[in-house]
Length: 207
Image 1: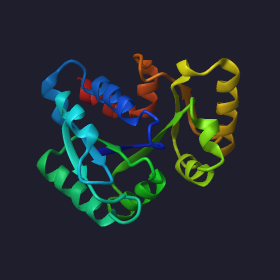
Image 2: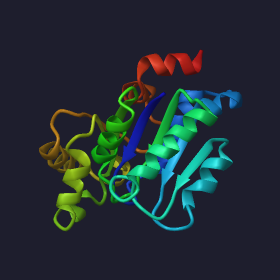
Image 3: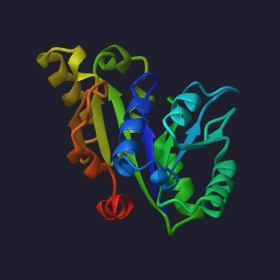
């Protein structure tokens, strides 16, 4: 069982990316959706994204009322054990809250379940990045600094010069991650999904 953590600030497009990733992994075979479980971490009592995900045929488990990178780490581990017992999926896609630090979540999982492979993908918002940078710099840096893959989303909403400035700024926080420019409103290149997902896992799910 491998885990992909999707992080990124509020409104960056995590759910849109998640739906495309899940669809790519399971293909057009509804019977395969149980092999990918989606874990939603929302702060509050109602998940806005939950109904959208379930409408698309995916098994969704929710963690409400706190952030799993800090106050709910114990509940996260209990949920992962339960998911493995109930579904034994090949992959869990976890959408973190918009204020979570994804690497803290990875460290929590690695400490309790070291046998699992955990990868972090962060989604950024090209349109709002420069506006958010000053007031949210510490949060944005904390989300990006340990990411394995960074997706610069909403590139269709900015000009080339702005996009170049955004990418340069993002690279100042993390220059080792694989970085891709995307618009989640359009189909995303399957090559990007192959980079995000473990190729061995991806092959086994689609066989």
